Image 1 (cartoon, rainbow, N blue to C red):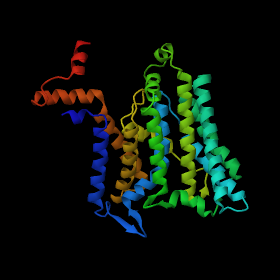
Image 2 (image 1 turned 90 degrees about the horizontal axis):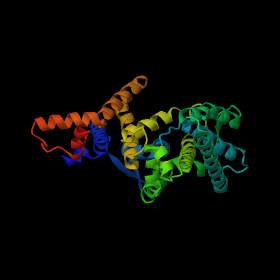
Image 3 (image 1 turned 60 degrees about the vertical axis):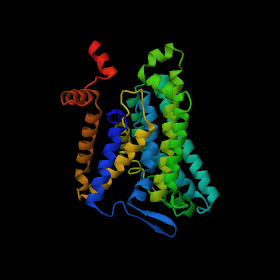
Image 4 (image 1 turned 90 degrees about the vertical axis):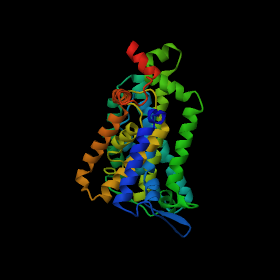
Length: 348
């Protein structure tokens, strides 16, 4: 069947399966209610709470597409949140919209600067991405502690809390933020030549360079985008907790972002990537967390479920498993005509 060969079929199937499991475990899972003209319920909570991970995973997708990795996104979140809350806390008027706007802009700019630093180490100095970003991953939380003076800074600012908890029309503001980010990244990557150049750099950097592609700028821009998106994610996370906790902000989110990207069908080897797949991957991670909650699994055992899902989905997406599946299907009389790529594999 042609639909089984679509790259998003298995990620979408995994998400639908988890949603069905959640609905069976908790019949009220899909229930959405309207209170004061606003939507509430588990689906709305997933759309709102997925904002930080969605933003980080978007940036991670671009970095992975260039054969890179960014382990510093959690630390960037901690730094940007600490900067925003420190500015608001030091302001004589924390409840002012102007103060919050300045704090958010400065926090995002800090994320941009940290992204520039990562991109410089990788694309100009030539340090391996995992090592270059590991430096900031380890040092970033220390920087956040220096900004907050080693304390957990808490603020009381209604405009700032509105970013994570507020509603626009009937849906949360955080949902519109990540949707806007997805649209912007999709427009830049799929409606311009940038996406094709990014994939060419990820597939074969040397061939791209010989073809005249400025791979250094492509790689650098991917890390800058990752830094900006992580900075926005840090602002949303800090707005949700209203506290700058350098130790817990963005903790392990880099691993969950990589997990979401892989679940969405993007290869860690670089090259072809899928923004839609990343969106499905993030929703899958969020739905999996809900499934663990509804099934009563102790939090200490949650990583085991994540590991099982990763193994199953990755196996389903493996080309060799697809080849074995098509061979079994032909033996059973389903899809007897071999595909063109199958014939090429045999000829090779």
